[in-house]
Image 1 (cartoon, rainbow, N blue to C red):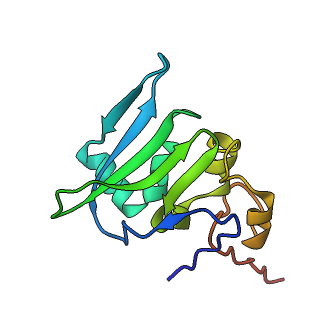
Image 2: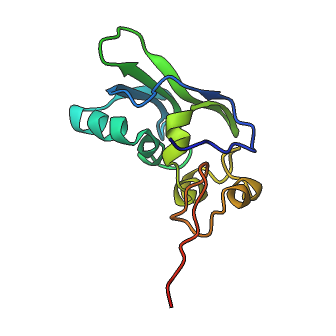
Length: 141
């Protein structure tokens, strides 16, 4: 089990908990209004395996909210929400798979971006995890 290291003090939820289900997103389109995007089955399977991939699915600044409906449920649960630069909440399963590169390219102007957070998890490059500890690889000489 990977432990979340969250020195940024983001509000977290534990709704996904490794379960499969459906995802949908609220996005801001180029015309300036919000719309809802329901993902197809292939995308839902991908996001169920690694929920953090949904944060890299849209252009910078478009994604506002992500909702999740677990299999066997009729209710949508908010697992990611932002208002402007503020991240209101994010599910721990999203944080577990989130990489520095995704944050640096799409979320650098939000609370997700933090050099202090990267240092706390020993992140060295864009392929490093942003909220779980990165182990240093030792090379044998």
